[in-house]
Image 1 (cartoon, rainbow, N blue to C red):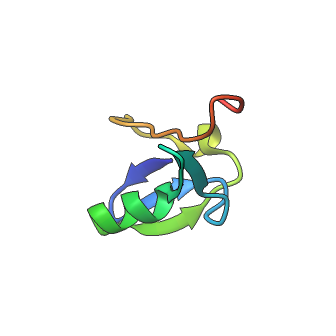
Image 2 (image 1 turned 60 degrees about the horizontal axis):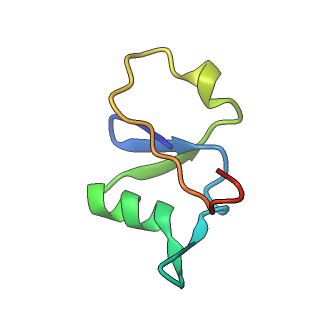
Length: 65
């Protein structure tokens, strides 16, 4: 996920649950509500990031990451 203005951009807004401390955690919901961001999908985030990035958030299980 990357942020720009009022939006958080990611590949898939529905692929967002991870296991954290033995519980299911919706990381996109947590980040978007905490920062009051709107959500937007981009197929290729690397192609989209035509501006300086201050933060890139990744989330996933250990086997994925």
